[in-house]
Image (cartoon, rainbow over all chains, first blue to last red; front, side, top):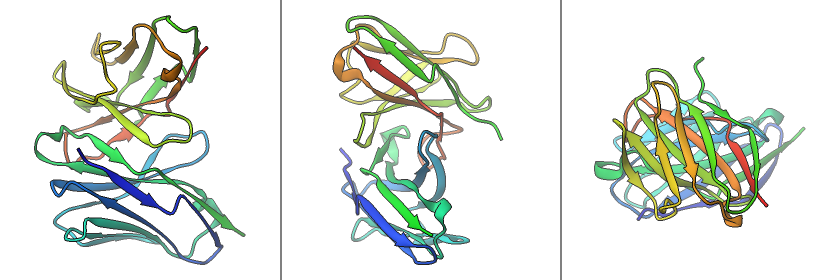
Length: 114
Length: 114
């Protein structure tokens, strides 16, 4: 089955700096890659996603890149703010008979220091 | 904005007891999921459900687990005889379609088995 590895497990940056979180996946059939942000005690919320027919997607300060050949995808946050502090999860979803099963990475605790 | 709602937020039970975790998916969604997250570990897929049937389940989802859509709005996860290792945060999610479709998560139910 699919396996998703996420790095780093913790990331500490100064406000205004950029943050990059990387994930690799194992199943070449995976074709949908969402990123979720989870603040303490709250639900995971989708912040951006990318489908396998696209190499990059951007939404304001957040961007995701996908390299299908290398089977890795990354989340880029620019001009970080203290409210970006949270746990970030990447996930992969295989098409075909996967019925929407998301396989998650281990999560990255992002801390943005003012 | 419509949300997935889960009740209770925290459930404490004795080992061997049955528990039912409840979820109300977003009203126009047809695909439903349960995930769990043991403290400090990654979010893990349990089961997906569509058209009153299980579409896919993980190896975690053994005979002690069952899901049901008892009416037009609720989606439940039952654990027949809880074990200590069932202690985790359980998330319900829903989407309009399967693969490549955004899954919206509930805030979770924290299950503590004593």
